[in-house]
Image (cartoon, rainbow, N blue to C red; front, side, top):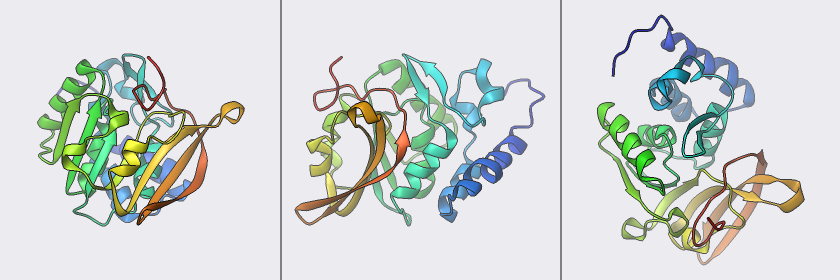
Length: 220
């Protein structure tokens, strides 16, 4: 995956962590180290690579985006991963969030509704050597029941409500982080923690994501 460039991506990556993540209270050492390791520029279109470590999302095709670095780190930190867990991602997109998760978790299962995006993410992740990230094309609002239950679930698109299928696929003690639409109040990043047969829900922060489309999400 080499190409001619005068951009020092290593320097930009280090600055991203130092200037965007740490000052915003991302403190989980595993998350910070994952962000230092994963080459974010490999997950964006070549014409946008000079902006790969900037403090905003970028288009990746199919009207989808690679999330802002801070949001990727925040959502990962919310899962409180210690290493070795099984995690579900809904919305593979570029594959960058999956790579961050894959640096910490034992196995990552990711569902993407656009085949072109899924194929490209799978290609990039393969070239980067990830063996623990598994991608399929499908309706992410229904999860991936074959490998449930999950220690953590990350949803990278905004839902009208919390999909019941995803809650059911959470392990007891597991966490789901998902942007949820609050009508006129916009989207709120929401943490759902499963405790036995009940859940505890808490708000994290305001956010803006593309719509979560599917049977338990928004209509096409």
